[in-house]
Length: 481
Ligand code: FAD
Image 1 (cartoon, protein in one colour):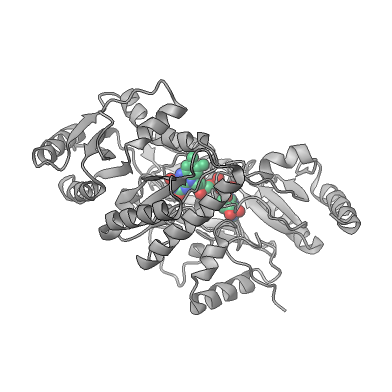
Image 2 (image 1 turned 90 degrees about the vertical axis):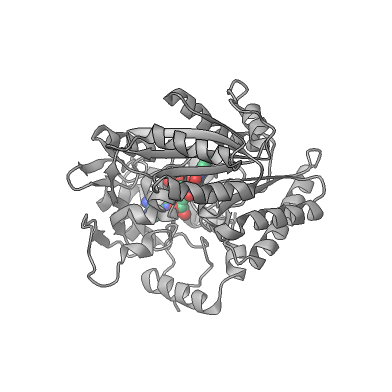
C-alpha cells in the first residue's frame, strides 16, 4: 500500500465514522477479518471499513456517502457464497456493507400466504418463524443456518427443494432496494398477479449486489408440509437414478420435494467428518439417491412412498433402500449428504464445481467429464453429486493426496479446464446455482456472446454509472465516460 493510499484510508475512515456514527463503522483489521475472508478461508482481503446499518435509511445514507467519497460497496449477507462475491477484491477503495443487523420480520400473513422480512434475516430463523404460523418457506440449503435472505435473493439460490418449488426467483413477490445513487426502490408488494409493465425486481435477483442493495423482501409461502417421507436408496448407476427421478415425478403426483444423488464415496467422506454417523445401507452400490416426498392435508405420504418404492424395487430400478422411521433417522440421512461436503473440506484444497446440463444428458456428461479429469490429472478423485433432478451436479475433484500446495493448485486448474471443455460440448452452465462472483468471472466472460455482454454492460452503466456496487463481481465494466 502506498503512502497516499494509507492517508486516504485514514481520512475515509474518519469521514465514515463522523457521518455514519461509530456504532455503524468497523475499521480495525481484527474486527473486519470475518467479513473479509471467504467461507472456505481460501482468500482473505482487506477493506476500508465494514458498515453495519440498522435500517433502510441508514443503508441509503451510507450509499450516498460512499459514492461521494469514491468508495465502492460490497454488500454482504451471511458470507456463505462460494464464488467470492461477498468479499472485497484487491482494490483499495472498497467497503463491505453487512446486512446482519437488518434482521426483523416485518409481517407474516398466513391468510395471504406471504411474509415481508428484512434482508439480513437468517434463512433458518425465517423458516422457523414462518413454520410457527403453520406455513412453509421452501428455500432449503446446507448453509441455511448462516446465509441471509438478501444473499439468497442476490444469488438466486437453489438448494434441495428446487425441483418442486423453483429457485429463489420463483419464491419472491417483491423487493425493497437501495439503488447506487442512494434512492430507495419500494417494490415490496405482495400481489400474486401484477403485470404492470416490466417486472423490475427481476433485475436485482441473481445480480450478486452489482445493481443495488436489497434491504427487504416479500416472499411467497405455502402450507407447511406436515407429512414428510425420506428414503436412502442404492442403485446400479446414475442412469438408473435419472430413470427413477422421472418415474417418481409421475408416480408421486409431483409431491417429490428433494432428489439428491451421491456416489458411494459419500459415506467414506461423511464418516471422515462425522465418525459416529450411522449409515443404514450397504455402502457398495455404484449410486445412491436421497429422496423426499412431502405434503399437507389429506394425502397419505408414507403410503405413497411405500407403494412407489415397492414398484421400483420389483422392477429392479432400485436395488436396496431404507425409509426413515423417525425425524431423527431422516435428519441422519440428510447428515450424510451434508457430511460429505465437510469430508471433502477435510481432505484439503480441492476443485468445487456447480454445473448443469440437460437432465437427459446428465449421465453421459458426468461419465465424459470424469474421464477427461482422470486423463488430465492421473490419480485425482472425482466426487460427483448434487441436485440431479435439476440437471445440476457438483463435479468436485480431490487432487492427488501427496500433492504439494503448488501441485494442488495446478491440478485444480487442469481439472477445471478438462470439465469446462466437456461442459461446453454439452452446452451446459458453469454456474447452476452459486453465481459468478469474482471466482468465475473469467470463465463467465470468455463464454459471453457479444449481444449478451452489450446488454449487461448497458444495464450496469444505466443503473450504476459510477460503478459503486460490487465492481469486479460478475463482470469488469468501465465507468461511464
Ligand atoms: P453472501 O455470501 O453474503 O453474498 C452472496 C452475494 O450476494 C454476494 O455477491 C453479495 O455481494 C450479494 N449480496 C448479499 N446480500 C445482499 C443484499 N442484501 N443486497 C445485494 N447484494 C447482496 N447455494 C445454492 O444455491 N444451493 C445450495 O444448495 C447451496 N448449498 C450450500 C451449502 C454450503 C455448506 C455453503 C457454505 C454454501 C451453499 N450455497 C448454496 C451457497 C450460498 O449459501 C448461497 O449462495 C447463499 O444464497 C448465499 O447467501 P449469503 O447470505 O451467505 O450471501
